[in-house]
Image (cartoon, rainbow, N blue to C red; front, side, top):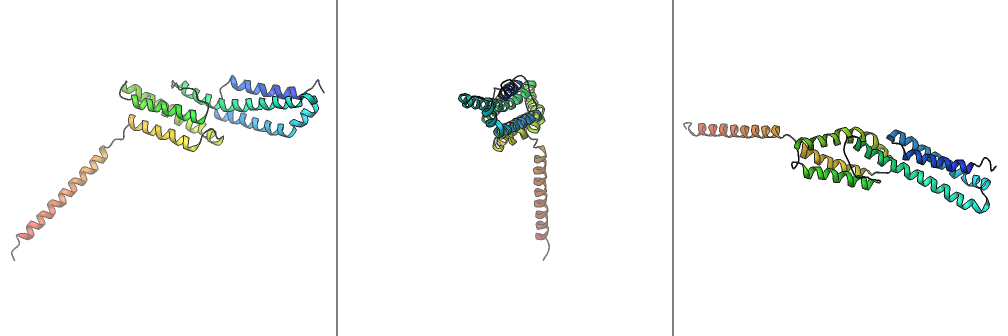
Length: 218
């Protein structure tokens, strides 16, 4: 029994899983699989863990064994959460968008909205083409291409981000767009101009009718 101590194997597996996440970068689908493995492992441990401890641990060591393994589960679970944020930050970095580190939904919203606010504030004070390029990369190459389509479902499904927080970022992104690419209102001015011409034409026609009526003999 001591030679094949399963508790040692459990602890080694938990440590290996945590180390794996420390040295790799995963896509949302891959991390979703890891998350599922974690949940399966936790469920199984809750069912058979105490029995294994009864078999393989000395009476005086049982409490410490359970405490150590529970702690390793927590380390693994926290590492999975951290991996999501690190992988998202890496998506920005790969496109030369350098953001501060974030490890929670609140930090993510704060960092991203601050970056956008700074870009809005500095628009026009630096090279206009550079500002537009940064917006295009952030919006088209990172946010809508990867974060919104791949990572956002994972964050929302795993309660790492709230819908309100997602909306707050996209509202700020829309504000940034309105600064970098203001809506062309030429068509609106044209419509208003046509309306004015139409009104003037009606007034002229009504005046002519009135004048004609006034000069008619009784």
